[in-house]
Length: 240
Image 1 (tube, rainbow, N blue to C red):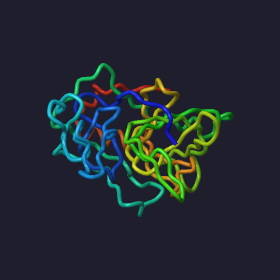
Image 2: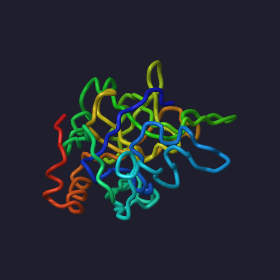
Image 3: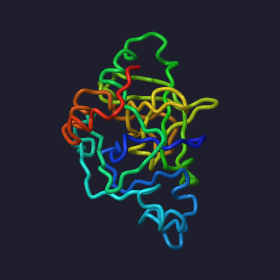
């Protein structure tokens, strides 16, 4: 369950990194769906999920007619699911701070490092707040939860995925609808993206989560091939 509100993060200006299975309207808003009306199927304040409300286009909401898929194949090539996507916004969004990308191979050191179970990651998304066999709860807000590293080298990760666990006091994980949201290295103040939320093993979101790594040569070369060398050079690459 996510417990904490997040700040907006993204790669600079007109590029948004997400999962390969997601679509292309971007809401840069904490409460994008908080006023959702089940009767109309729309949030009248933000326009979520159908449109950008008047006055928000290019400010806190953007459209896109340009989507790129890293090759997501509905998990046919698991564990290398290629679950990444890139959205080029039609309207540039100006923010005081943008997300950074962890340098290639940043997480590889953790795969063999002792004490790695204490490494903290923070996921952010708009998905379900809580899910159980009897009910689901969704605030339709962008929330954050901290989890700890579980595995980087297993049959489910294979060097492509990051496995984390959000169980325990003060911890949280991802749930249905969070796919494509960023996973940051470190606590709530971090803006260093190491992965994007991909999948879980339990329908009731019990805190065992997997995200597709973005600190790989293939992913970053793919981003560079789309945006160009000059634009890629504007993305802040962080060594961790």
